[in-house]
Structure formats: structure tokens, C-alpha cells
Image (cartoon, rainbow, N blue to C red):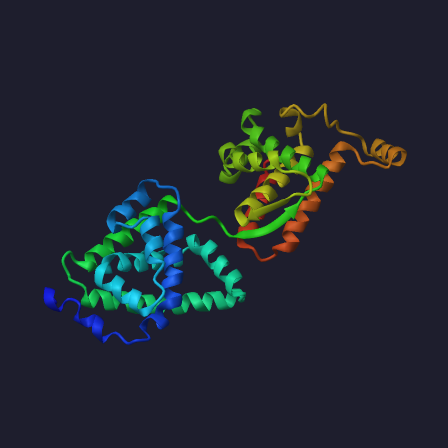
Length: 325
């Protein structure tokens, strides 16, 4: 362990271009750390700030380092704060929390996504070496190794409390009739548990993604969506809509429609009456219209994502539902 008088001697051996080598690394890690600490101050984040002593103001001060001399001054006066900034930035960069930072860097530098990833990888390599350098030379009381483990554990707890959102799978725009159909499908499936006893209803209730609590977030999103407005969907959300539409379609061609009280709204029409009505009005019946929109949406999903495992599983579950009708 270095003696107090020699604790800063290692700084004199740092090459004059040290800051130039670290500039991008310091900037990227500083922005990532600032992004993390700017989030709502819940208990897991407060634990991180308590362990490191960092806050947005302190990070902003450290992010003003812009020269070799300023870097040496920070290493001499506030080495643990700089260590923690790099550590938290490094942890953040390896997660989706850093997405806004990386998007900002891409815009500012006018580079491609692949170049951003290459820059991130390079900076992470530098920060790993920098942390190792600090761990070698900084006083070991309290132990930096134990401190780092504590910070990493607290960060893992923060991630567990804030799971990353599923990646975007598709962006869709619904026309007015399509949007109304989606809302109908979700509300219909949401109401099925209260519709009485039927093997089909029991089978639907066994699908976690179609239970009322699971459907409510999407119902809320669609309730405020305007026709033609973009709707960004993750794959789990897309699969949920796919299954809800399929279940809705099954309900409309079965006796279950009577159980949910929609039989009189969408009455069964004999084939010859359907043909006569279509010739007279040029419009499909209510049940036909529902069937066409259901099949149109489900065909689009299947055609767009032919190799998606989650969709294959959803299709198998839907086929199993048909056996209960």
C-alpha cells in the first residue's frame, strides 16, 4: 500500500497525452453517469448515490474536465469521485439506460450506428484499464475492490427494479375501422372471464397475455390513439394483439358470441341472405367485416415475422383454443 507521502507519486509518471487518449472515454462515461443519476430518485438509485457520493451536480463538475492538467488535478484531489463516475458510467453503458446517450453521440458526431458501437467498445476497454490503474495506485482503505462490488450489486438491484423495455418490433398505423376493431377485440377478450362457463373461455383464461390485467395497458394505449397515428409495438405487444384478434375472430364464428351478449348486435345470417345483402349494399355483414379485419391483421403479422419464435408459440396456442369450440 502506498505511503501518504508517496500516494501521488504515480501521477508524475502519467504521459502528457493521457487526457487526449481518455477524452472520448471520459465524456461518454460522464454522460452515461449523468443520465443514470438524472432518473427519478427511488430507493435503488438513492442507494447508489449513497455509496458513491455522486449526484448530478457533482457529475456535472467532473464532466468539465477538458485538459491534461485538469485531469491530473481531479486525480489528485477527487480520485474516488472520478473512479465512481467511470464505474457508474461503465455499468450504465452496458445497458439500455445508455440508449439516449448513444443516440445523442450519434447525432452530434454524425456517424453510423455501427461506429457508435465501435466507439462504445473502445471507450469501455479504456475505462477498464483506467479503473485497474486507479485500483492499483489509490489508497486501499477502504478497499476499492469491496467498494466496487458494493456498487455493482446496488446497480444490479437498480436494474432489477427497472427492467429494460422490450425492443421495438414494428410501428403500425390503424385506420378508423381498424382501430375500432382492435379496441373491440381487446375489450371483448377482457370481458371473457365474466361471460360464464365454457371450455373455450377456460382455455383463454389460461393464456397469461390475455388475462384482464395483462390487457389493460394496451387497452389504455389504444383508447387515446388517433386513427393514422404511429403505434410503436414490442414483439410481446404485437403477439398480444395477434392473439386477441384471433380470439375475437373465434368468438364471432361461435356460440360464445351469445354468451358475451353480442349475438343480437352481430346476428347470424344465412349464406343466401349474405349474398343477397352484399349484392344490394356492396357492404359485408358485421360478422364478415370482423372476420376480414381479423384475417387481414393476422396474415400481415405472420407474413412480416415468419420466423419469430414467440409468434409460432402464439399460433400454437390459438390452434389449441380452436379445439375447445
